[in-house]
Image 1 (tube, one colour):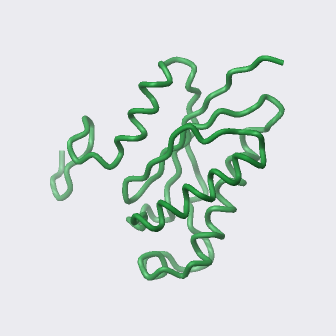
Image 2 (tube, one colour):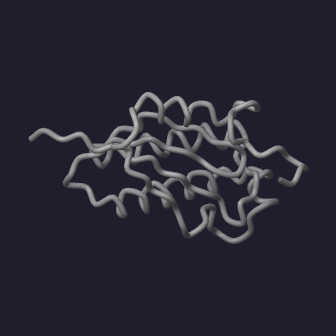
Image 3 (tube, helix red, strand yellow):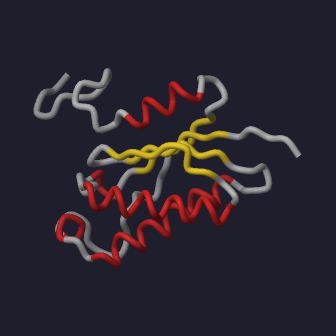
Length: 137
């Protein structure tokens, strides 16, 4: 079987709180890689920007995308919450980490390197389109 399915996934923590520190991001990366492995998928790129996360995932056609995303959210939430880090517990109460919604965009229309570079540059303070903190448009 030959396939080439790529998807750009955007996840947001509850209340869009800025809880994605370096250690939270590292924990999320590990969790996302583990989940992708379980589904026969590959985490091609991942980065966070304080209040949201971008993933580029390639996955086999036998995988229901909604199930993959729900597993990514559930497992990563459980792993981060288990750490009990103050940056998370102060900003998010209850047992949830992620907002119930998510964004999934087919990566078929743009070259994968362009999407991968976009995701990897989420931390860049000068990236195009990044809103300036404290300033309204």
